[in-house]
Length: 327
Image 1 (cartoon, rainbow, N blue to C red):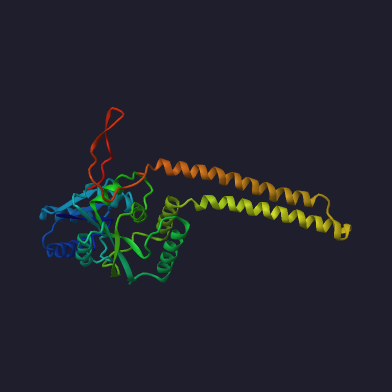
Image 2 (tube, helix red, strand yellow):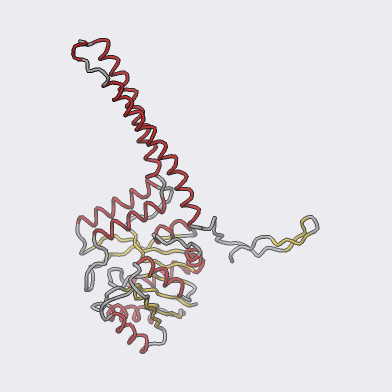
């Protein structure tokens, strides 16, 4: 069996040689398992490509792909899946916050029959309180906003069976949130607990603005709630309009007419009512746009976890093959 380890890299010259040393040490100690390491350089501007070239020339089981520019972590991740040859694929960042020493335990869970073994962080040393709390809030909020149930406190560090890798490769969407996509495809999944370490060297490649964009991609890719929220805002505005009508009637008939400003009630109610109608109309249009968005992503309707080869049978005199499952 061949295990592929995919390592997306972006400006990691300070850590990449240590990353390779630790990965090689861990993988070499695993028995009855062949392995390869696939480094994906995401348009680095430092010496990362040069160092990776040296590593590749020195070791036969190392492969190196250099993207033409910086496409982003999720695209580099996807490129690695496209080029990985293994029956199982591990994805791990180059910064050594996710320890390579957890990989043997992931492989054991895979051999037990699990298709996805993801690393769940029990603690995250070296990260700010702000980042820790925003991460906790984000994953719990995403689970509430969508019908996707994604494990919390989990990053991209995971092992995936070839079935799962092929399923992800069949999903061509461009704004990718891969940890959500892995949860969406299903199959048997289990967590492996570990302590996340501080960065070995260098700096985070996810500053605040990138984190916000990443969170937006996740919500938009897996939830129509923001679109439906517009409808509820419209319903609320119409409700306020009816309350405004009652308020105007009470003022008109039960208070001193000398304090009454002619025409204000009709303007007040009309603005509220028409605002509500417009919001509901935009929300309905948004529902259709959301469904179009879901269709153009061309996600497969389903994946088969297990199945047997179909046999040819006759249907009204014609030979028809039953669908084939995935062995």
